[in-house]
Image (cartoon, rainbow, N blue to C red; front, side, top):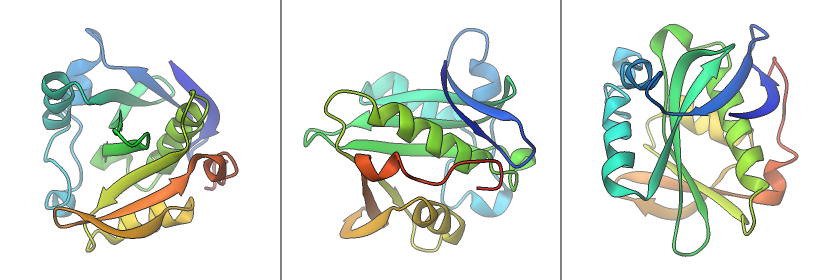
Length: 168
């Protein structure tokens, strides 16, 4: 279990857990709001399959006080950067700070790993919710693209100083 003491707006502790025999079905059923399906998979099951088949990505369950509330995955690029992707917060959990808390928790954990120097992620330019979330913790566009998505980066050292707390 990965914890950093970050809570959502309801005061629930957000933790990241390995996807295992007990929680994989709940993680697979995580679904975003209907309007977000043009930016992320309709169900987190697609990301679970991707991490199982490609071995480059590592899926984690996002849990709020122990209950599955979302999915996030991370990977290590050949250039040493750590990528964050496949973040989906269940529609019923959105607007509560779960995504922000999960992002901060994952970045704090990854920043403590040997050789972690930079985070990268990508988002569709029309996905303003994702863009605003990532910018609020310090991600800045690099000028590069990944398909039709904007690539943003944040030095790992800066991530340790990113905002924390239930109101974040």
